[in-house]
Length: 346
Image (cartoon, rainbow, N blue to C red; front, top):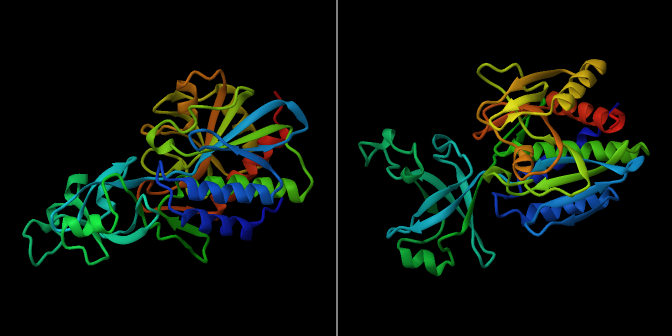
């Protein structure tokens, strides 16, 4: 089995570098819709902006949903200061201490984009004695705009206003040793992984056992991404980042299988099936519990859908910061998805 790594890397670079904080995802959704059309797959958007891509299966009367989210952490203009800097509000669970010094873009409602830098409110060691002690909370951060904007009126005249979205520069790099390091690997790498599996199926004239509906969700980082799923879905396999760190078995080279997160245990049978397939195909994997984690499956189950649900993903280090994974973990995730789509019967 040989997945198209050049295709995967191309997707990763394009999707990761397209700004898409939760609520500002229309540009990246348009790109993913185009990718699905190039694969010959039909798709449609829901009212709230999720994209649903359909891949017909051998048994079209049975439907398995996949889900991955394309929305990311971000910021929004809370207010404008008298000196032309911007106060902020967080979109999703940013690690504030990682934001100091990051470049960003301000996206206005009139479709103009400005660049800027996220700084502490005491940004100079030569001016502020407390410089090294601030920047740990959203109230201690600001954006300096790369324009001649020295007053609140100057900023307003640029067309910037409260409620404008701010995206954080992902700083995407793919190293010769196979590491992918970037902000927003959670969960754009999983979108790229699934589309690469779909390309493999298409290139080899293969079909999944069941009809697949891939839900690309756009509000996962704020808790309600896949709260709606199509009524014909009986199983939901979510592909999101696997956690790496304290008390966890997963590495960046594995596919992680989540047994339980903050919303509770995942379906016993589905988790067992994923473990069995991993062992059968000698896929490097880990099973873990994520204590501070919720997923699109959590949103769907809380919304009352009568489904079985499971969660897998490549191991990702430093989540919600400057993240990193490895091509081996991504390929192992592809192998497990492919096995699940083509072998599991229900």
